[in-house]
Length: 296
Image 1 (spheres, helix red, strand yellow):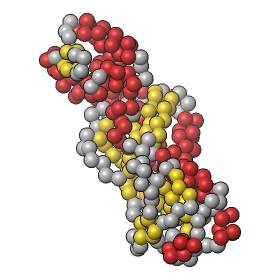
Image 2 (cartoon, helix red, strand yellow; image 1 turned 180 degrees about the vertical axis):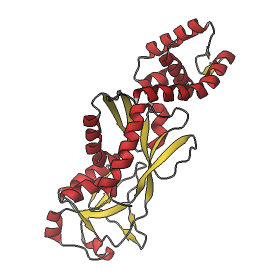
Image 3 (cartoon, one colour; image 1 turned 90 degrees about the vertical axis):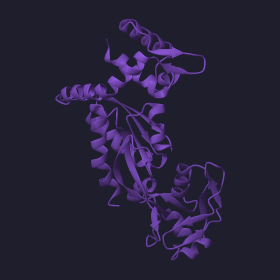
Image 4 (spheres, helix red, strand yellow; image 1 turned 135 degrees about the vertical axis):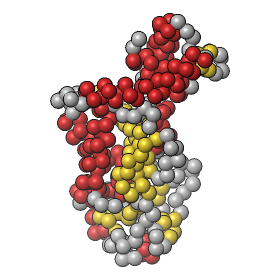
């Protein structure tokens, strides 16, 4: 009996269908159905009751799931312990990134892959945070703000907010604002939220600033690029701006005004735990991200 087939069975149960498991594991649906069928033959028992609308566990399937829910992490830990003794770790990692963290983390991911050339990496960029973990079959993901599900483990990368930024070229042409009130005299770049509403205010701990944007976008990445190219002043996530500040492409403005901050977490599933490759990635990011973002 293959361990991979038992893990596949667990994934089908977690996601509720063969097709969802196939999508999460990047497998053809027919492959998932065939392997579950072969597992049932080897066990001599039916694991699922299949209907056109729903997939339910049989009593045997329920017992198997409950037993391996505890045993599988122990097996993975034992195998990881053996692999960890290797000088050349191997494995695959599926990592979820927040859009605002994509830019700042890309160099770190490249360094990680150079350090561990036999580990492969698959990256998903999504604003949904930990809510994508099961559906996409992620090993690790970034999440900002409150983590409402206690079945996940979260490790903090720090607290981050947003800041005001402009390019040196824009400031040479239009001057530096000296207070929040002077922002009304400048070209402001605003964000359009997923529900279609327009960003009308920029929130700071000391004040709320009305925003009459001359340029709107539903993409922070687009606004970041427009700011670098001198289109105006924007209120960007610090994680998006940090590399451009270090390179001199962006200048922080009015830093005496602080925006509300959110905790950014590295999240993984408690029951499943982490394979050795993902554990290496976790420890790498926890160690390296603070070096390039500074204290928060």
